[in-house]
Image 1 (cartoon, rainbow, N blue to C red):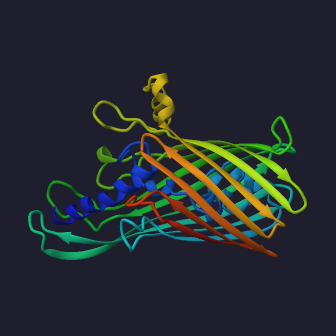
Image 2: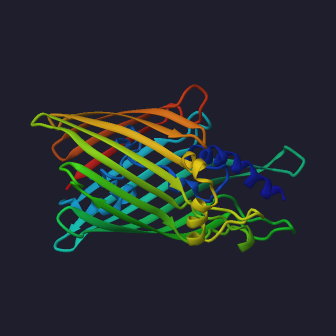
Image 3: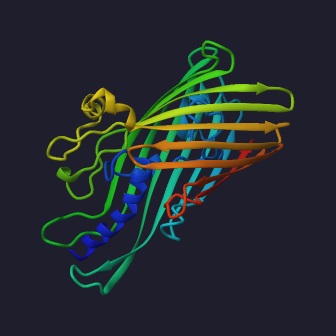
Length: 352
């Protein structure tokens, strides 16, 4: 039971993450899969599923890889939830490479460090030990053109969660380590109906539940749907302006006993269980804009609105491009005391 209590303390951290990224507290496992990478996308209010034109398309929309014509690398780092703790951080690295005549392949690694946890007794606050927790995902992705203006993509993920050491009490057997697999399915259509209007969709984290202790206590993966549009308002020699909007929906559901449905039934139940008048509040709404001057400096802003999770914040960002190098910065302004407030993302992009 002593080590089990350390798991419960870690759940406090996940409760903050869940409230920021899901439509219900503790509604899924491995919620770090919903943390969006890339300082550029962050600065645009996380409205990127229909843009997806850099190496971070491995996360946002693998179909966007199909239109990328050269090898590139993206690296991102963020001190995560700085208002909550000072030892949490989130990293994302991706590399994409075109394969002549077939499409573009990508490889990405997601890592979140959850900091150091303290082991205490069941009714005794005395420290009995410490351990570190982290989670990671490795994803291979591929995008290929279906026509001149549309493409499809897929990503295959291996997920590893290391939350706590082995439990040694008599009521439960197992440890806080678990593995899982997931698939993302994506589509992108450029110049939809009119020039410079793009449509993107990405259904992510399709896979079986993740199990720590036993199958009866398994948690569903955070299956999520992203749908978005973007439009290039200004396209001049020295000035470019893109506006984008996106809606997200977490697609998991539970029965009357609190057990999660499987991935396919869960998707259908997530929609059918809600009255139509209440359905819209379960969507997360994002809007953003990106302005480039002379293809050298970029300014970005956006807004994120999640009614159910009670998360509303404004984002800002900037970028510099020199030759084949891109340096991007994204900032969240969520209000005083909010766990996400003052979260900063830094990204480096390299074209090869």
